[in-house]
Image (tube, rainbow, N blue to C red; front, side, top):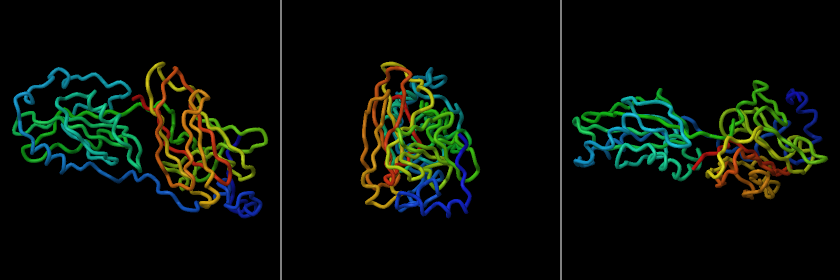
Length: 335
């Protein structure tokens, strides 16, 4: 199916025919209350606080030499992949969620801190950590674990220390997101505005009599981050049926392992009265594991635990125009 690309004249010509009171998404309608998109240049590392905390630590004998072998070549934590390191620079990057000191250079302990970190309202779950050793006056003093909801890389590993404090053994690790293209950025059939029911990574389906009840849009004003987003509910406002959005392939999950499904949801496109019935069912292998009833709501992060059967199927069901539901930045992380 070709992407639906509408001219400005076409938008004006058919807007009055829409069933929904709000101009539907297919006609490039505007949010009733525009949600706040993710700011990817916000909440940078609080380097000053970390340095101050390091300098306040007392050096003890057991901190001078701890797990020397694993600091040289630690094993990558399960559910993560190495982004960079070791280098002598810590990240100064956006999406900062705070830090903690570890008792030793323990990448598994840092991964656990990231996995269990409370979600950020704007950025969601922890997706990346930076572990590094502070050497003060030549003595290894602390092991810092900094956490982020935006994945960083070596380009921002620019904090080499201050004064008598040196950053050493800095490594960055990111969580493996098993939801392929959870931000829908693989859908780029146009340069400004288009939509379709499906593309390689996600498949939208409608019930009998429905039309575009689950779809993917390329339109930056609709997205939580990037340019693309998914929609549940008739894109054209032509029916009040609920659609289903399903990952294009089974996830690379392992039977018996525990995972966390995360996503951002917004239902503030129509008026509060029209969005009151907004809902989304989160489905795992066809079974509903959670249902949200957010009503009229700005971008909000949701997270639900699941246990894998192996090569599991993730889908989302919901929306009923004009109670549209937008979904973005879907993640499936091992915990």
